[in-house]
Length: 149
Image (cartoon, rainbow, N blue to C red; front, side, top):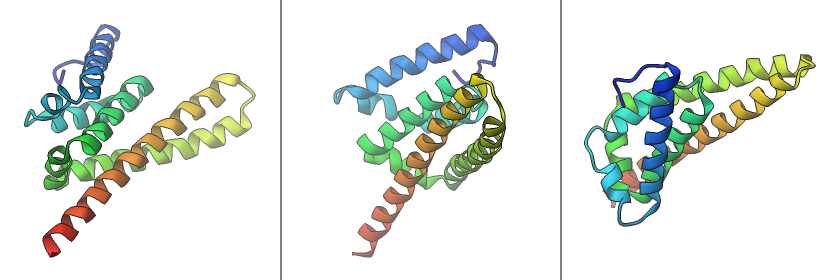
């Protein structure tokens, strides 16, 4: 998935691949296999950053990352053990927040329905990313508390 570009056929391949991973991550038997690969989080964060302008792909990746953090404790620890990845996720969140602010101003002044729809989709992306960042920070605090005892 990492070698694909932003052309329409490649976007469809990524969408289908993410849909398959999402379905596999829902089942308790297959979820650990989805998140156990050493490069899983790196590839997902890379896709998250590269396709942040494609809401369907962006939200699917954020959802996969969140499900991994929530359902597989080792996955959250793996992400938190590499500060660069956590920093990239936070930077992507900050970028999406800034884009949301500018889109909101445009949507408020625009009379087109498209601008308001774009704002609503971007708002959902920002909310999902915020939940992911909070889950990562929560996991980090829990790890810290466990090591203190």
